[in-house]
Length: 197
View 1 (cartoon, one colour):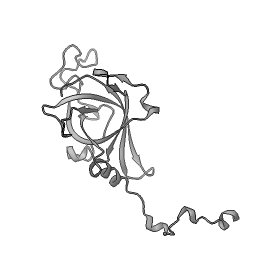
View 2: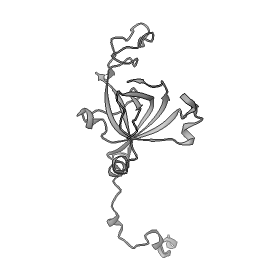
View 3: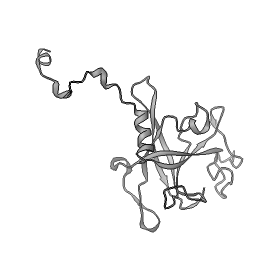
View 4: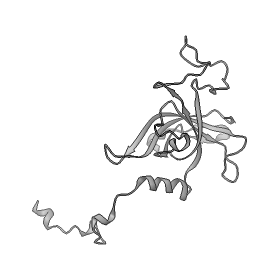
């Protein structure tokens, strides 16, 4: 222990600022700035599945015998999802990492598409839209990337480019009992081509 008492550690704090003046980084503010101020985020549709008594609210096309949605025809109500949902336009950040994304596959017109992507969202990205503070992301939900126009706005009529199925949702906290700073979601792309959402 005497070694650490006698060693000069000023290189860890080169400006000799008291540690109390640093404060703790506000990750909520940092992510908000990345998404909005620095404009690194992208507009997405977050398809939030409705829950009823703790279970996903099944659509009328749900077959009780096969325990799945009607796969022969695309239901106009649930769009083939099998559950009722609400769509919210949100802003998020997409990140591809080699370790997670794996080998890309070919999309239309020779474009490469990573099957696996990471998405980052603000801590309250759903509750701001729904008005319900108890709404949290689940693996039943979907993330939809839509076609954008030349000005970077969502094109009209709304067309889906890629749907991402959520594999896991991680609520990031600075410590075990701390507040949620942001959500990270691991997803798998389900390229279905451009069609009306």
